[in-house]
Length: 118
Image (cartoon, rainbow, N blue to C red; front, top):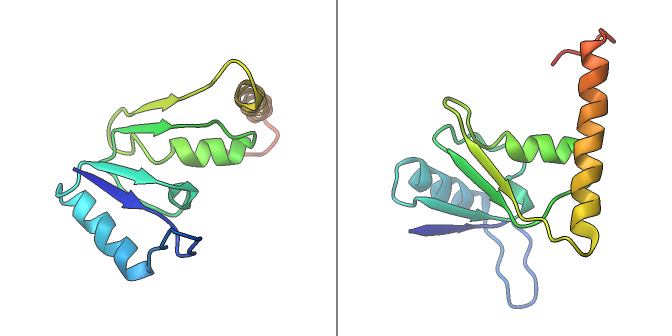
């Protein structure tokens, strides 16, 4: 049973969620009432849902920080899986490659001992 999880702002024809409704939904997801959480970018950071074992992104992002935060939503206590839909034609492949390359650069700096922790 899926749960729709969006931010607080409303758009034409789309109603946002209050913080209380968001909290209640996350609790129901944690309790197993919902087994799928369909979320906007509002779920990229700040949510702690340890039982999440799979995350599917319908689009890549060019920012390595956002990419890391997104992937951090899964596999907190066990090995999780991340799937990213990348379409060959268009900006998706460029965003995906940009994010991966930036992560590799930052990982290389950390391994060289630039003072940043992993």
